[in-house]
Amino acid sequence: MAAWRNRMWANAVLLFSWVVLCSSVCVEVPSGTEAVKGDNMTLLCISCMKREEVSATTTVRWFYQRDDGQEVLIYEYDGRPQEPKSPLQGRLQWTGSKDLQDVSITILNVTTNDSGVFTCKVNRTLDFKAHRHLIQSNISISLKVTEEAGEDFTSVLSEIMMYILLAFLTFWLLVEIVYCYRKISKAEEVTPESVTDYLAIPLENKENCSVPVEE
Ligand SMILES: *[C@@H]1O[C@H](CO)[C@@H](O)[C@H](O)[C@H]1NC(C)=O
Ligand SMILES: *[C@@H]1O[C@H](CO)[C@@H](O)[C@H](O)[C@H]1NC(C)=O
Ligand SMILES: *[C@@H]1O[C@H](CO)[C@@H](O)[C@H](O)[C@H]1NC(C)=O
Ligand SMILES: *[C@@H]1O[C@H](CO)[C@@H](O)[C@H](O)[C@H]1NC(C)=O
Ligand SMILES: *[C@@H]1O[C@H](CO)[C@@H](O)[C@H](O)[C@H]1NC(C)=O
Image (cartoon, rainbow, N blue to C red; front, side, top):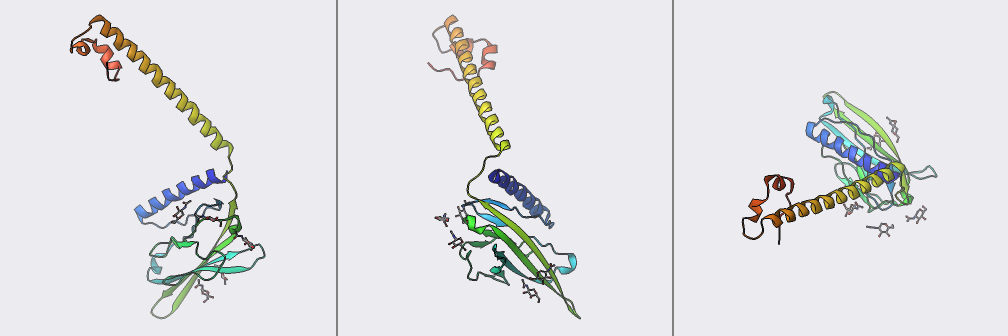
């Protein structure tokens, strides 16, 4: 179930990102929350800028909260990426954008231990002539990592449908080949020899059979 939904999510997110990239419009897409052990999981955090924020300075902090409730700083982007010592050290990758509207990170090779709440905190400082203005946003993602890709009814059903379709197509192709082969053989019996044999096959046959004739 997780894998299926995750793939759907990944596709949806990809499509969204593509649309966003193409139109260069920022859309605050929520992150996926389910991953399968061993996958790379992108924790999506998008904090769109408004027009007046274009000349802002952005800093990002990612926190991880274990079951005991304590928040641990796992990643910091303050002009450049920094990875403090944490249980996730070495497995984090910056996947945000240059303009820092997308401040996502990716956890490589997730373990079931990585389940928990991840929070991305964004500070955006606007420098106006007279004063500075700080905008904060916190986005929390409740990540659930499962041991195995569970099979969901929909995915099982679509798999079965795929096999039935494949079997049917194979069968149909075989029937078609045999039918065409017979037709060609018959036509050859009527006018044997000579290279012009093939040309002698009634037009109807040639149209129906695109299978090349070989001796
Ligand atoms: C995860 O990302 C790493 C580095 O980008 C890559 O080498 C690896 O193949 C990825 N693994 C999966 C399961 O996608
Ligand atoms: C954002 O600003 C607040 C207040 O100045 C500070 O406590 C916090 O650490 C800052 N967060 C980031 C991500 O820089
Ligand atoms: C992923 O993590 C597991 C356990 O932490 C480790 O055994 C495995 O080698 C890792 N896989 C990759 C591709 O790094
Ligand atoms: C999972 O977390 C526990 C407790 O924090 C730790 O002792 C253990 O080594 C962790 N396992 C992995 C594979 O990271
Ligand atoms: C984000 O979290 C910080 C504490 O880490 C808090 O001071 C701040 O008010 C929060 N901001 C929002 C918008 O919830």
